[in-house]
Length: 316
Image 1: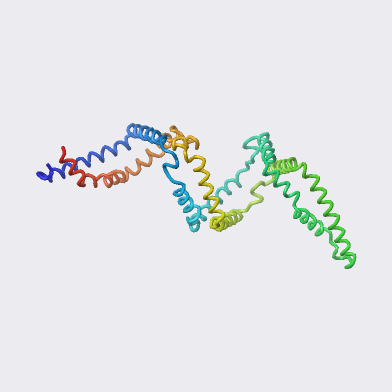
Image 2 (image 1 turned 45 degrees about the horizontal axis):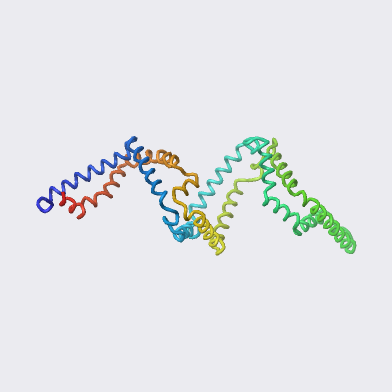
C-alpha cells in the first residue's frame, strides 16, 4: 500500500496526527474529560504502586546521590541567601507590626500547658541540669560579683585579701544555691518560661519588636548560611545524610509505594484534589499560549513520520 501511493500515506499520517493531537488536547482541556482522566490515571497509578516496593522502585544509592547533590554540592550562594533574607525580613516586619502573643492565639491555659510540657521534656531538664552543674556557671557568677565589688581604691595587700574573700564566699554560695535548685530544675524552668511568656504579653513590653532590629534579621541569615556552607562540607554531615537515607530504606524498603504514600498521609483523595487544583489553570494557560498543541505535536509527529508507522500501514 505504501509503495503504491506514498503521497496518500503521508496525507493519512498528517490527518491521523491532527486527530491524535486534537483528541489529546480535548482530554486535558475539557473539564469532564480531564476529571475522568485524572480519576482513571490516579486509580491505576495507585493500583500499580501497591505491587512495587520502595527498594524495587529505586535504590538507596541513587537516593544518596540525589541527597548529596542537593544537600552538599548544590550551591547556596547567589540569589538563594538573598531571597531567604528578604523573606525573613518580610516575616519580621509582619510579626513586629502585629501585637499578637502566643497566649492570645491559643489561650492562656493552653499556653501555660505548653510551657509545662516543654519544661518536662527530658532534653529541657538535661540542659538545665547541665547549666546548674557546670563549673563555668559558678565562674560566671563569681566574675559578675567580683566586678560589682570595686576594690581598686584599697591598698594592694588589702585588695588581694578582699578579692580572695569575695571569690571564696561567692563561689561557695553559688555552688550551694545551684545544688539546691538542681532537684527542682523542672519547676525552675517552668517558672522561668511562664514569667518570660507573661512579660512578653504584658502591655508595653514591646515583645519581639523591642529586642530585634531589622539589621539583626539579615545578620542571622548570613550566620546561618555561613554555618550551613561549612557544616555541609564536613564528613560528619555526609555520614548523617547517608544514615538518614539508610534509615528510610531500612524502615520502608520492603513497603509498597502505595502504603508508603499512605504512611506519609497522602491518599487517593489528596492526589485527586491537587490534580484538580493545579491541572486546569496550568493547562488552560499553556493551551492559551499555544504550548500544549505544540508539545503534543513534538512528541507524536516522529511516530507518524517513522518507519514503524509505515510498516503498520502495510499490515492494514
